[in-house]
Image (tube, rainbow, N blue to C red):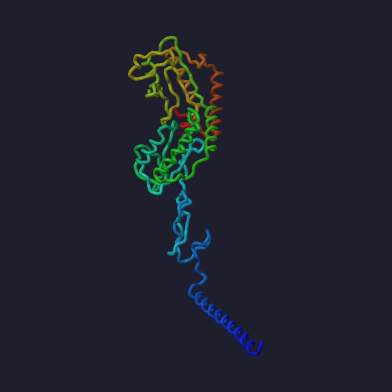
Length: 369
């Protein structure tokens, strides 16, 4: 290779190096300009993760719905507006005092828009017409901060509702098929009003608790009877006079009721024969058998009421020329009476131990007639 060729090669290499250096210098100038125009503090909202600190100058706004009203209020995305704290979801109101989770299957319903009570009542009547157990409905009054029991005459509109199905009564515990119809019915009602269920209790837990209560009810469901029998007919007019003098009143069920000051029935006096006591036929009625009955679970102090019932039975027998006997036709002696008193104390103590005070609101619901 001669001197000219070497010179040309060296010139070409120098030219390529100069071009590369010039391009690098130009790239550096453009990057510096871009960094000044777009600082690193700006973040892409689509790439921000849950829990990242909010950037001043941005607002948190509701995002997509999940189907859970409580979670929906917490779903947040970033928007390019002013900053504010997200609103907290409404908390679930506690159950009304008279309800008991061992006995009642309670399901809260939350509506975004207030639901008119007449519309809700009409809809639930259609859905639950085949439910045999007692179904109670409540609406939460925000102004009074309490649940209101509602019925066909209720008015107003509310966001929170409560369905409470009593699972146990004197007829026994609810069947699983009917329980599932209830759950599906509440969901159907919520869907109809674009509302959501605020939690559904566990089927196994709810029915398990109900069966336990039913077993207890069967154990203490005792009615104590004292009978007044006579060989000669006792007239309705005479019975009416003696009952009224004792403070008992003839009621629509065809029996005389002894009531406490708060109107609770203490014991009843009925005809031991098929005919009921009715005002229209009482003057002509005659019977040889009267029955006084104390419903043990429904009375607060059954021991005291038993003593009063036995005293009145003895008064009737003495006045009407009759005899006081038990259900087997045997006369009551001191030993029999003591055995009944012991039985009463034992059963009522058992109810108190299980948190179902005799004569209380829960006991009266469980042992309703």
